[in-house]
Length: 279
Image 1 (cartoon, rainbow, N blue to C red):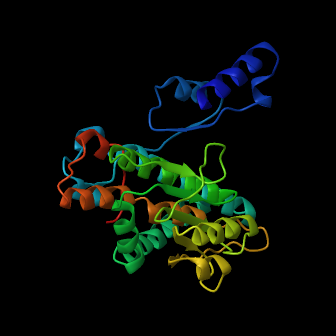
Image 2: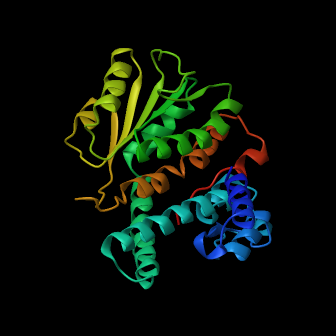
C-alpha cells in the first residue's frame, strides 16, 4: 500500500503538478528500493536500518539483545515519528528530533529492562503458553499497538494450534473461559475498551492490561496490569503508545523460549519474524 500510494502521487505530479507543490518523503531501510527511488526523485529519503541480515542469531535467547531486522525498523520508526510530532508541537527545530529520539530510547531502555523481569511479564508469558485463544484490544493508537502485538504473538500461537484475534473486528468470536485478553489503554477509562475487559472477565477469560493510570477501571478489572507513564497533555503527542509497543515487543521471543521448555521447538524461521529489544 505505501508503494502504491507513492506511485499514484508520482503519476499525479508527472501529469498535473509542479513537483514543488508535492513531496514524497520516504523512511526506508533500502534507498534503492522502488519507494526509495521515488523519495529520491520527489522529496527526501531517510535511511533507517535495524540489525543487518548477516548478523542473524540462531537461538531465541540471542534475539533478546540483537533484535530482528523488521521490528527494529518498525519500532525505530515509531520513535522517530513520535519525536517529530513532539518537535512540531513544541515548534522546535529539526535538531530537537534527534535529541528527543535519544531521550526516548533511554526511557524505553529502562522501561523494557523493568517489564521483562516483572511479575506481570512472567505471568503473561505463562498464560500465553497455555492452549487458549488470545484477544488484543485498544482504541485509536492503542488499537495499533494491540494489532502489531497480535500479529507477532500470532506467529507463535498459530504454530501451537491456537488462534489470535483483535477484539472488535468482524471475525472476533465470543471469548471462552481461560482465553486471554490483552488491553492497551493510556487512560484506563476508555468506555468501549473497559466494556470489553469487563465482558471478558464475566466470561471467565484472563484480562491483562498495559495502562497509564494504575487506579483506572481497566487496571482494576485486570488480573494482570502494568503501568507505563505517558507524557501527553493538552494536545501534546503521547509517548505512552510507542513505549507500550517496545514493552510488548519481547513477548514472542520469551514465548518461544517458554514453549521450548515444554519440548515444543518451533521452526527456526519463526524466530526470524520476531524482534525483542531488551538490552
